[in-house]
Length: 459
Ligand SMILES: *[C@@H]1O[C@H](CO)[C@@H](O)[C@H](O)[C@H]1NC(C)=O
Ligand SMILES: *[C@@H]1O[C@H](CO)[C@@H](O)[C@H](O)[C@H]1NC(C)=O
Image 1 (cartoon, protein in one colour):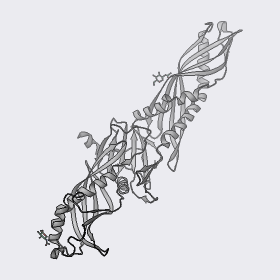
Image 2: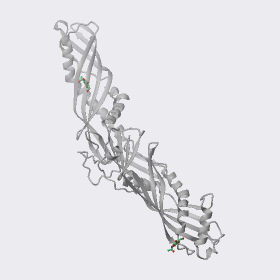
Image 3: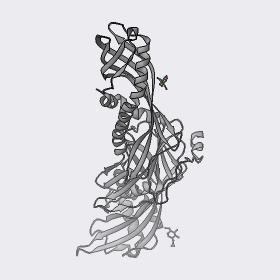
Image 4: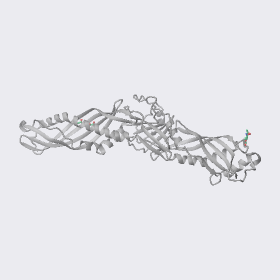
């Protein structure tokens, strides 16, 4: 309960200043911890950094420093191995992601002291710190730039077989590496971050099929931003029906509820969810004979109809089975309130007979305004809405057999809709709303909360 209360507190990210035109059906807040996991996986664990540092060649080192201060030169120095790389992340408000990569670099080369040439191994601790900034936002893509890149060298260990090196060689090597490593390592960090940007932010930009109903095109709606607590991503989702018609939504970015101690927060805005619901519930009219195997109350509905039709409908009785056609009228309307999601939807209920001459006799044409409760869950990484009928309000549109008072039909219609329409709608909704791939963070152990105007997912 307290968690939900806290959600009510409006949390302004100081740097978010979205322009009013930006459509953002969905926004995410990624925690520093999640960023660290994501970037560690992308840069360290899959070997990307090592791969780009492999074979790095360092300038020769010359100086006085060998035994008895004889001239010393180290040549052919190259990187052999990146040992124990690790990565940490700090989010700097308004600046971006501050990345620190720590590692032990194992270098190897040839060392000439006086006339003696031998192999030299150097092991040096280094921390590379750089600020990664997003820039040049254009149609859903951004570029990253690496700024303020620093390399801080720590302990250094030098090994030669002869052991003929003095401490002053250590100092000389450290001095030279301090001067040369930043210009070698920082461009590698830049290259690696550009690749990671394409890999991670590129996957946000995707067209995902929604069953056979249509597609949803997710893409960044604006440039990612950082607060001290999270990396913020506003995404737009363009919902397209098969055939290419876009179902519009007017969602615009809004303040996010707090991320608490979670990895990822994703909010979906009401208008966007409504567009998805509209897409999934675009279904052809459902026509079926009103028989007990399809609708358990079929016989009772028949009896009631004959009772309320003036003259008992002598002309139509027994001629052919009564048919029912259910047509969704207009678009569904979802309403998200604190801890509650509901949908309003109207359905045309046509109860009719096909006469022998081929014409149609409308016993009843009703409009049913449904109030539905919605259960929201995550199934297989998709957002699934499930409807349950809460209320039905009926109005008579027309009747060819003179029926004028339909109040007695209400329970029959409710059970008719419950038994025939709801399973079809829930079947259509079970495809689920595909969610964007946010930095590859898997949507497992997701808590779903409903707030005013928002569906909130916490990973
Ligand atoms: C590198 O960073 C780590 C963690 O921030 C720190 O413990 C270590 O002393 C640093 N090493 C150097 C060489 O600065
Ligand atoms: C309609 O029928 C119900 C009972 O079937 C009755 O209570 C109600 O008064 C009727 N309404 C009108 C307007 O005739």
